[in-house]
Image (cartoon, rainbow over all chains, first blue to last red; front, side):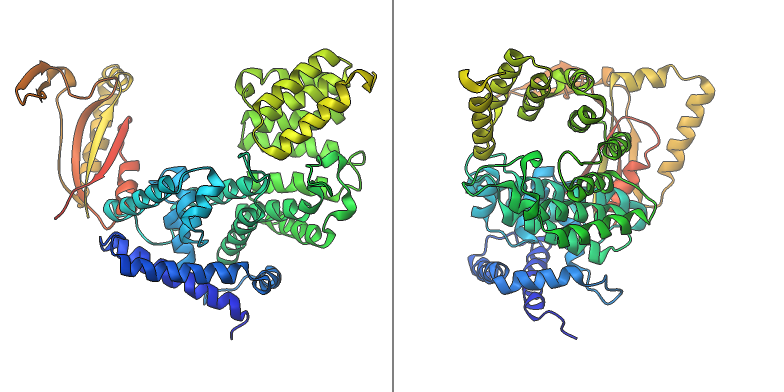
Length: 384
Length: 113
């Protein structure tokens, strides 16, 4: 039974193009034949139209409510995702190839998303295709004994894609919702095809929890609003409740992991009626668990933010200062330091940290936020 | 597909091997021997240390220049190779991951025309 007409059509086109392309690459006929590539490009345009169609978006929403289907699900897309995210390709090539081959992005769109030239993206795609063919990268879902490691790669690619979409590191577009939504769409696909992988569920929940609150991230003037200051009535409560069900479903599988924990942290924020009423002790527990999987300085920085509301700004600042060497080039590190220093009344140091943060920030919306904060807090009449 | 596996080691790997007791070294060699007993292996050999290598390098003028030492500069040295015949890269990587000695294994397809 055809449940979702347009979705099926789009899916078939995607598979068709991709399978053909991959088959062709595998047989060595790398895309030098213009006729075949015109046909592919035409299909890709068709996909673009379908995917940007509002009706299609609504059907995607329907799809979110669909229970996981079983054995009759074709796994071509899954094979394709695993092939694009093969560890023999560089991480950047994995992202680029997934966007191109699975999401149907054009070279120009990918170039725009990552601030690369179209020529550089084309070359990267070309090189990755050649590698797949010549090195004999298999076109299949990995064997069970390799699944954990390989799925982790796929989730990493989706996570990178989502982050780039959610808050671009580039100067032009502050957010690229399309990229973020496409990443969530792919994560949903992976969950549907691999329903008993709790980390995939965790990542999907994490993305949906962020997207559910996306509307409140920018005010009427298009300025970025931090979580603490967001109008929580603009959050999509229904989407949050659905995402929390995903977190719980993943938790019931009793195989915790970093994406599930990040989703659980996001769920704590999403459920809190206000910044002040946030369950910080619970968030601290979750960060401590997350540190067992990921000791990255960025996780420790985030934990320090939570620590401020449990142990006070002094304890939090001590934790933050310990990360100075590793995170000196990261604008959020200096912005966090500024917050904590201000909380301790050390205004001059706070201002210096804020300026340092501004100097390191490229994203336009983030720059604007820091500039407003600097003007508001440290102007002569701002008081103490 | 055919792949060549190049087994490389760093100076640390070599030192670790040299510092093994006879029993440890025997066990290590037995593991390597067992690895080579795989039916998918079409050939392979252990190489004498890099210190025994001599390199012939052709300059821009086409003249050969003979120098002491391996052509790879730096810390890593090729310690041996194997040629395997498997279905695809995943199978080749699976074998490479099972390599019992430590170090680095480069997996490279053989160019077939």
